[in-house]
Image 1 (tube, rainbow, N blue to C red):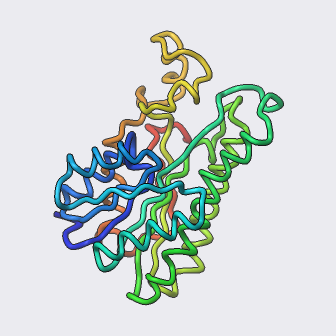
Image 2: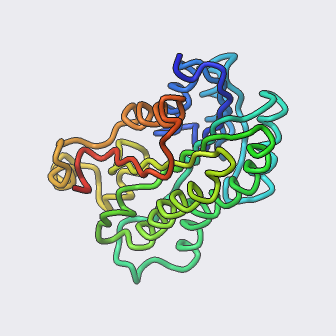
Length: 249
C-alpha cells in the first residue's frame, strides 16, 4: 500500500503501459482516473479495477479537454496528488523525408503539447494544496535515438527536457517532476517503432541492441512509476529513469 490515500490520474490508461500503471496504482492503495481518448477502453479498465477508479474520456492534445479531465477527477476525488502523462504516439519507422507535416504535428500534439496543457491545468491546484508529483513518459528515443524515427525521437527529447526544467521551476512549490524513459515495449506501437512486421527475426534485430535481451514490459514501467509516485521518492525530482534493460548505456 505504498500509494495509500493518494489520488492519481494516468493518461493513455486504456492500454499498454498506462493500463498497467493504473492497475498498480490502485493495487498500492491509490484512487486513479483512467484518462484516454478510447472511452470504451477506459471504462473497461476502470471496471476491472473497481471502486478505486473512474474513467474519463479525453484527447490530451486539446487544452479544453485536459482541463475538463482534471475538473472531473477533482470533482470525484477532491484533490489530485499524482499525474502521469503517459499518452503517446509515433509515426511509422521510415525515412525522415517521408513523414509529412500533419503527421509531425500530430506526434508533437500528443507527446509534447499534452504536457503543456496538463501543466497549465494541474499546477494551480498543486500550488493550492501544497505540492504534487508529475511523471512524464519520455523514451530512450530521446536519449539514444534510432534511425527512422527522427521526428518521434525529437518529441521525446522535448519531453525529457521539459521534465527537467519543470522540476527546477516547480520545486519551490513542492512539486516533483520526474520522467520514465522506456525502451521499445511490448505494446500496440511495437510494429510502428520497428517499421516492419513483428516476426521473430525482426524482433531479434531490435533485442540485440538491449543488453538484458528483452523488450520493456508494462509491469516494468508500473514498478518504476509506483516508486516515483510514492513518498519513498520524496527527494527525487528531475530524473529521467531509464527503464531500458541497458539500452542507453
